[in-house]
Length: 225
Image 1 (cartoon, rainbow, N blue to C red):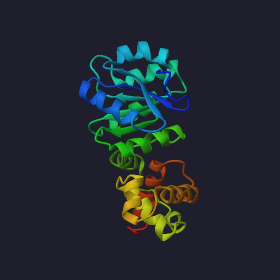
Image 2: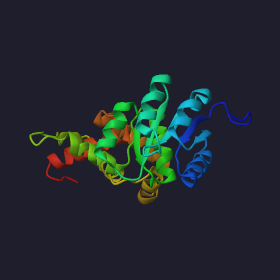
Image 3: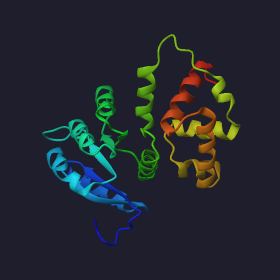
């Protein structure tokens, strides 16, 4: 790592075989306050060999790599560096890859078309112990685990204020914090305060869990808004 890099920065490595995407992700990360890309790799084999020497806090991992897959690389890295946070990147949501990635130890699962603002939120969420997922991926998780006989608790939504309901609805359609702030004409800090209260009231610890609970309760209540 460069000696000029703040010791407080969260360090990342990027594993992506497309050089344009790899450089693009690195540039996005390096523009984020508090984050710094320390290494970039075009293959899982090279990443597996060199990442332990860099010991980054986090890894952005492409799933479909030539040779060893990103899922297998994740499994092996987690055995070497159990504390590392790995977020998978994919072009399309795929149930099999999703659950294989989570079983391998991935902390989150994002579509590559994720915006820089949403990526920043996902990194923050993973560092806070959450499991960030693109909204489309979260919906797949809900559908995969929802049983026909399940009875979602609509009372969960009754705990939320009107403003909190609006914010969690916007979260469920993929809105980033800044987009929510602009739409509701409030500050990003106010959005974060509302989200902390939403987490407390719904007894969840991440955006994905909040969205899952919202969608479940909404369906169970017949579409209450």
